[in-house]
Image (cartoon, rainbow over all chains, first blue to last red; front, side, top):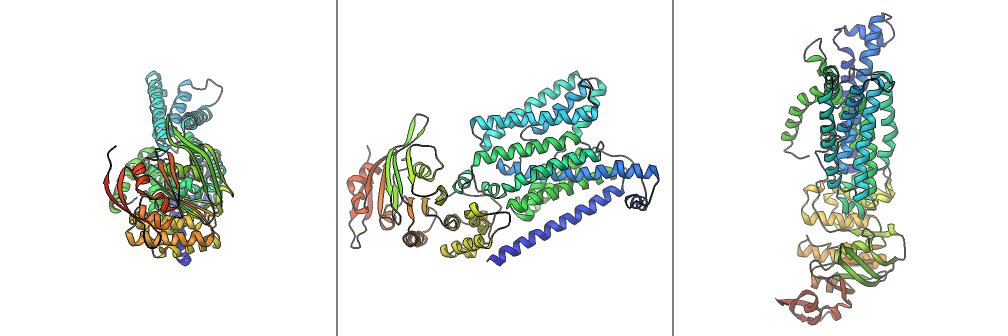
Length: 340
Length: 247
C-alpha cells in the first residue's frame, strides 16, 4: 500500500515536471517574440552574449526578459495565492478579487495616478507603492473583522465583498473626477499589463514570493486538513481561526506585491488552482507548487498570445487571460463533468 | 488516560447546551453518552476534546495531543484519497517529507479497520459508511490514549455497526484507552459500553452501569418514550421501544 502512495507521488512529480517543461518552452517563445519582429537567431545571440548590437541588447534584456520573467513570477504568485484563498475560504470561486484585495490595489494605483508626483515620487514608484499599501489596507480591514468576530469563511467573504464594493466605489469616484489623461492611465492599469516590467520590479515580487513560500509550506498539512472541514481540522489539532487569518494575511500581501506592478490580472488566480487539483489532488505539498507552476505557465502563455493576436501590437494581458482562459476553463470543467 | 471533569458548562448566548456536568472516566473504560436530539451530547464531547469553550474543569491525565476526537460524519468534497485522509491522523508528526513510521501507522490503522482496499479511492467517492470507517482509521492512526467518538457508527449497516463497535472495544481494552462515544442506539450502547451517561437538556440525568441506566423510568425521563426492557441472559439489557410519551 505504501508502494501505491509512492507511485502516486511519483506520478504527481512527473506531471509537475511536464508542466515545468511547458513553462520553459513558453518562456522561451515569450522571449523570442515581440513587436520588433526580431529573428529568433538574433535573440539567441543576445542571450548568449554574442551580440553587442545596442538596439538588440536593449530590446531583449530591458524589454523582453523582464516581461517574460515577470509573467512567470506573477503567474506563480497568482496561482499559489488562488489555491490558498480557495482552501481557507472553502470556496472554489475565491481569488484575490473575492476579498477586495485587488480592488484595494486598484484604488491605490488610481489615487497615485490622480495625485501625480505630489509626494515627490515618480509614477513608476508611487503607483506600485500606493497599490500595495491599499491592498494591505484592504487585507487589514478584512483580517480585522475576522480577528474581532472569528475567522469563518462566510464572515471573511462577506467582509471581503464589502471591501470590494467600498474600493470599487472609491475607484469610480476617482475616475469621475480624474483628468482625461489620468483616466486613460487608470483604465490601462486596471486592464493589467506586463509592459512596465523591469528586472528590479521582478526581483521585488520574486523576493516577496520567496519570503512567503516557507510560511505557506510550513502550514501545508494544516491547509490540507482544512479541506475536510473546520471541525475535522480542529479534531486533528489545527487552530483553524489562526491558520485562516495567518494564511489570509500572507497571501493578501503577496497578491498586493504582485498586482502593484502589473495591475489586476484576473482569471489566473481562479483557474490555476482548479487545474492543479485535477492534476495532483489537494495534498497542499503538491497542490501549492502545482498551482504556482500552472499559474506561471498560463500567464507566460497569455503573454505570448498578447503579442500574437495582432502582430506588432501588445494587448493588455488582463484582457488576454480572460478572453482565452475562460473558454479553455469552461471546456476543461465540462470535459471533467464538473469534478473539481 | 484518566478523565476528571467537574462542573462543565457550555453556553450559547443565554442558552445552556451543557450544564454543570461531572464526569470521571478511567483508562480501559468505555463510556457511552446517550440522550435525545439537542440534549448536549456532541457539545459535551467537543468540550472534552478541547475544541469547545466551556466553564468548569476538564482534566485529562495526559497531553491534549493524546486525545483522538472524531466529529460527527459529514460529506467531504476534498480531492484527497482515503489514505491521505488517514495519514492526516498523524498530523502532529507529519513533515514535508512523510516519515516511513507515519505511512506505516496509517496503513496499519486502515488494515485494522478493514478499509485498506479503499486506500486510493477519493474520499468524496466513498459511501457514508465507508467514509465513516476511514475516519475511524484516521483517529486510530494517531495512536491516541483517549478516544472521543461522536456517533461513530451512524452511517454503518448493522453488521458493520456490530463489527466496528466490537473492534473499538477490543482496541480500547488492549491499549487501555479511555473511550467516550456519543451513541443513538441504546442496545448497541448496552453491549458496547461499560457505563452509560444519560443527558437531557444539557444536564446529566444518570451515570452508571447499562443495567442500572436502561430502565423504563430513566428512559421515559430522558427520551419521553415508553419501553419494554429485557434484562438479557448475557447480562446486556435490551430495549424495545413501545410508544412516545407526550408530556
